Image (cartoon, rainbow, N blue to C red; front, side):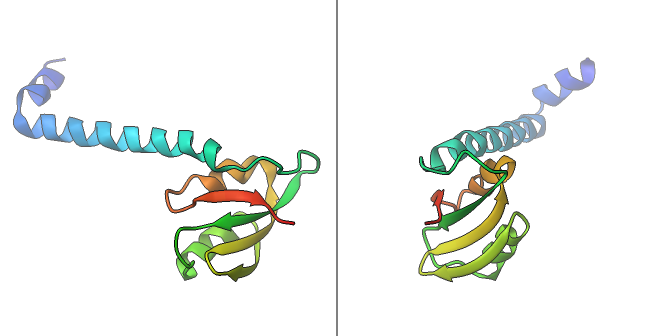
Length: 107
């Protein structure tokens, strides 16, 4: 217990605890915000869905590779990427990154 007291008593310990608190808060915010990025109208039937992921910028190779880990990328147009065969359980994981603006059904 004295180790924690010593850590909180020093400036370095306070900075480390502050950084850890900020990281945890950021991760919680990303998880909460992911639910708001999922558009209504994504089909509820079936295990896999086809979605259109919208970014605030043109996607680069990094973004495409991230999406390919969750489904098949079938194309990109402007700021949107078509991802097919996404497991329904992975939709929040797809919407979680801060650079994803919206995930909506692919029509």
